[in-house]
Amino acid sequence: MHRVNLTIDESLYEQARTHSFVSQKSISQIMRESLSEYLKKDSKEKKQVELVMSAADENEILDILKNDEFISENDFKKQFDL
Image 1 (cartoon, rainbow, N blue to C red):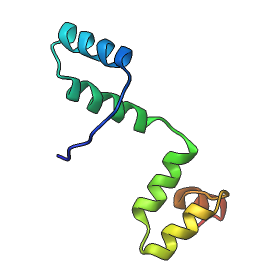
Image 2 (cartoon, rainbow, N blue to C red; image 1 turned 180 degrees about the horizontal axis):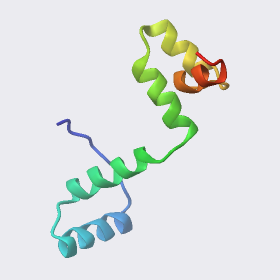
Image 3 (cartoon, one colour; image 1 turned 30 degrees about the vertical axis):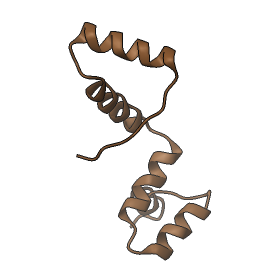
Image 4 (cartoon, rainbow, N blue to C red; image 1 turned 90 degrees about the vertical axis):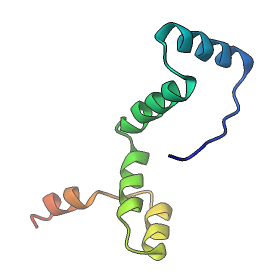
C-alpha cells in the first residue's frame, strides 16, 4: 500500500469522521472504497488512463495525452475489422 496525504475542509472531515463511526470503518477504508468507485466510472479520462497504463514507452504516452481524439485498441480493431 501507498500512503497519500489529503487536505479537506472541516465540514467534509466531520462528515467522514461521523460516517466512519457509524459504519465502523476507518476513514482510510472509506477513502479507498470511494476512490475505487470513482475510478470505475466510465469516462474519457478512464479510457486515456487505460491507454497510458498499457503504453510501451514515454513517446507513446505523450502521443496519447496530447491527442484528444483517440479510441481504445479494441474499438480500433472493431472499427477496422481486425
